[in-house]
Image: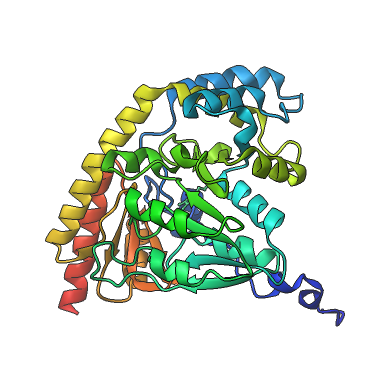
Length: 379
Ligand SMILES: *Cc1c(COP(=O)(O)O)cnc(C)c1O
């Protein structure tokens, strides 16, 4: 048994109260637990069309060099990103997923005694990154459930929490798990109001889907706001969640600071090659965005036809309120081989977050939810 040494007491103070990030249930786990196959996973906002074929070919070609360390500076991928964004490569920080750059930002700029501001119902990685370095957090109340952007970020409430010890603000646009978004005018007004010693992290993980809906591209404002950092990822529209690559765009000074603590080979060779090739595959992105546009519309409409309230979404998922605890519905869907995302850990115990799948996957999840609701109505 236990030797009496409480390891938890030895952990860094911020880490003692942390709960691990809860990912969507992996397909292999459901196969093991329920003995079912043909599983549909709509739980982690992955691209239902898979990955860009160009990216897969580039990674295949990279296989012969896997005995060698990756290019630690990520030269080729940074050049491709610099071209895409029309900036110099010294403003780019590559990460093992954008999660990695979010953690690097917290490590580089936050310490105990300093604070970050984020919103209720924000992406779960922000509180973990902030608490892990022992910094404080201020949680801004979100918009109400019947606002134009239900449960979305309230920038005025966030601004009101910024004080002398605030060093960082996290904003996801659009936000996960709500799907809500901020307009150019309100986001720019916020950036203009925030003091220059507060870094504003605008997380654009869903940008490729969202720009289709008129959601602004904050990377265009980097010259204007030296305290602005924009993060992007290859995990969502690019369909490369498994290889873990994302990046931050910032002032050269901020990226120099992040680079001082970045593990030297945080992005592996396959990821570097796959991401660079994916950037050039505009055809794949266009197909993904078009398929998602129809999927969000169809899925939302079908959920509404079941009598459920859906959040508007500029991303590749729909947040739906079941009006009852969502756990039984989640379990029922698992039994039918469908994985969606319960969001109780976000403080939303009656909601489910459903990633937009292919048309047939969307029909399957709707049919299963309809069967669940029929059963629960009858009960
Ligand atoms: C999915 C997601 C990310 C991306 O995470 P990766 O580490 O790049 O896979 C970042 N921010 C938000 C809000 C997300 O939903």
